[in-house]
Length: 123
Image (cartoon, rainbow, N blue to C red):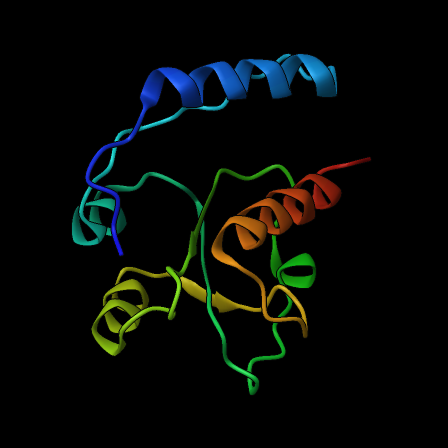
């Protein structure tokens, strides 16, 4: 399902709290909901990835992510991406990646992807 309302004020408070707790001085940008087609066609991210359940995909994010790049990683909804959404991402230069052998919930996959990219960028 898709959320029809996002509590942006609550998300911002959570982001500020997480930023302080982690001792990082960068506040992430939180955009409102948008259609996938608009997101993938208008991104300026240099490194574009799409993570979804595909046992045949052995391209783990930690091995393909370019350090110190700008990233956009698409994490599928519960039930995964549709074939049309996968095709749309690939046409817009998104590279299919794996987050590992475990099947993750959407929320957990987003956290795992952020952690992996943090590891890639740690000196």
